Image (cartoon, rainbow, N blue to C red; front, side, top):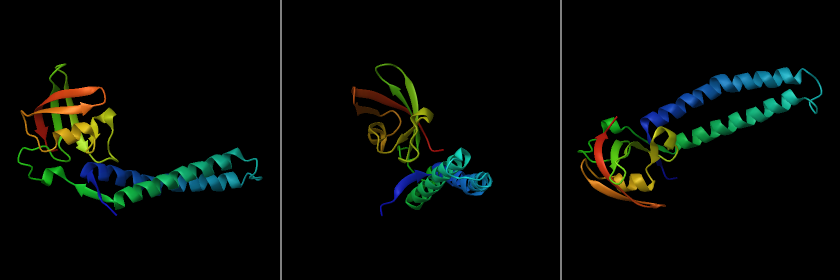
Length: 158
């Protein structure tokens, strides 16, 4: 099986979620199922069916997280020596040359990518264009709506 890169922060967040699901959510739902069972006829017991459905979601999420973590190659960017180059895990501020808009992205693994929080997948067109570049470099990103010209303003390894 091929390993997938993941930042240490991403792996820690998944591990925290996994512990919460196993230690808090799973016992709560087991108790809810037991309580619903005590109410009698399971065929018409909406509480029971809702609890069983919730249990299915929790168990599926636990399995998904365990699978992701088992295939993760955890990379701690603070322990790398990137020599000023953009690498996996770096936080990069770029300037859109055409619009003068500054954007900051953290380059993360596929499982961690979340554009709302400015985390982009290492496999995204922007990340692929940025990897290996240094401050001051200009890159052209081939986007669906056309090419975008960015200038790299800063690189952080946090």
